[in-house]
Image 1 (tube, helix red, strand yellow):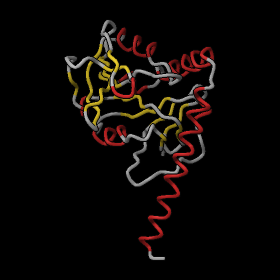
Image 2 (cartoon, rainbow, N blue to C red):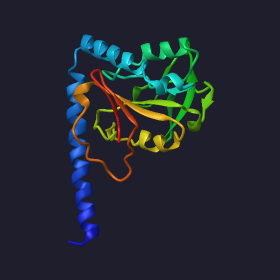
Image 3 (cartoon, rainbow, N blue to C red):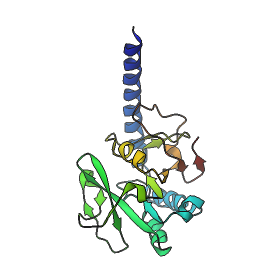
Length: 200
């Protein structure tokens, strides 16, 4: 088997492993009781708001959660109260556009039923973002993550050239190693309800 064939075979194995992990973690997270989801999210928010990186930031990218994802609203309210700009992503084609939202902004149902800013919300360029919250189904201590498979954040993260990127996840979503693929991009921080990890 040639080197190229070996690399392709390894890549296929990693893709299958990642798909299995994605399905498993989605099922485990969906089984989390709402009360546990709220309690764990509150602890994640508490840890987030003590970070120097978020204190220094003026423009923060967040995300609107779906199903049992980490709740971000309390964190966003604290950021607005501190006078910071908060942006959310909106799916446009195969990319994420970033748009500012306020406490009274009415979100609309976008792609994949994810709440998004309305089309007329002010846009933010990726380089303006100082800190970015990133969702994940699983993440490892190196900052590699398993998302939903669309690759949106893997395209976006390299554009966030001035931002500290941070996965927020429940501690059971932290695994020893994600089977990363060539186009996968690691984040700088991982914050769970039990720990803060600075990826190396």
